[in-house]
Amino acid sequence: MLSAINADGRDCFAPRTEKSEGPFHCPECHKELVLRKGAVVVHHFAHKPPVNCAYGSGETIEHMRAKLAIYEYLSSSPRVLKLDVEKPIERSGIKVRPDVRCLVDEKHYLGIEFQKTSLDPREIERRTSAYRTLSVYVLWIVPWPAKLVHGERYQPRETERYLHSLYFGRVFFWKPSVGIVPVHFDDHLIDVPYNEWYVEGGHGEMDSGGGYEYRSKRFVTPCVSPPVSILQLGPVMRQAYTMKARSLPAALLWSISTPVRPARKPPQ
Image (cartoon, rainbow, N blue to C red; front, top):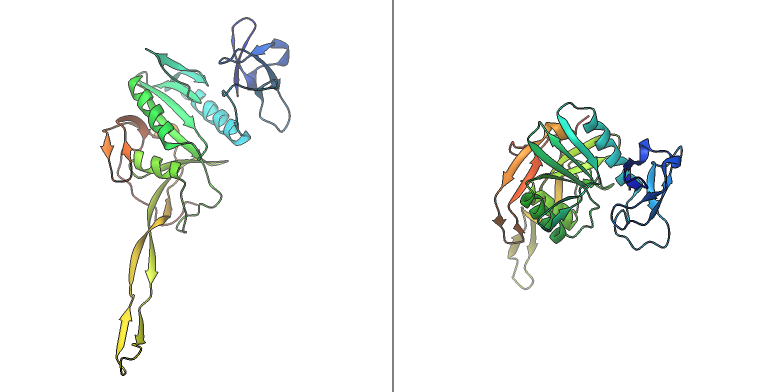
């Protein structure tokens, strides 16, 4: 995690905090934290073992680097106010804790969630509904998978399929050194070649089959768009929608408002 509270009750941001400012405590469980700093590792706070607090549990270096890059980008824009990392938003018993939160253009509250692709879609639905109740637009970002290549067969995880439906046919992936990359999942067509054969016992009669394509239920064809910045996106409202495979909640999304236009070739 990148944030903690010191003995004076002051919020501490790991990249801008020295060890001499401790001791530090977890904002969630209030147990003591250790500030880890080094030339290679991302400066961050960690619980002292044994750990039984879910806050920051399982967070990868990639996650922390993405969070830090997003924070630094937003902190450089005059359009952004009230910028915080890992700060909860709570009202009337409803609570969310985005990785980064801010106010954009003095009117749109934004919560950014960087999540591993194994997160249960039901949890995404629950949090997305909570953000809407709190009048906060949400941007869900997932890590770029090593196997995802523009135009080549790809098997998305269930989390990615859910986000693709939620964001009107896009998933916002985080690619290290590049940033946020929107990807549309187009159909993957499987070719069944045309074939002819003699019918057994048919006295020279021939039969035929194939010569068509069908849509794969398992695989998709990724269409990778050029990278976008968070402030190139904007507020989008979506209505609740029920499909055969899943139901989507009414939501306040931070997204692209234009229809999906798949890229014909990968960005340079």
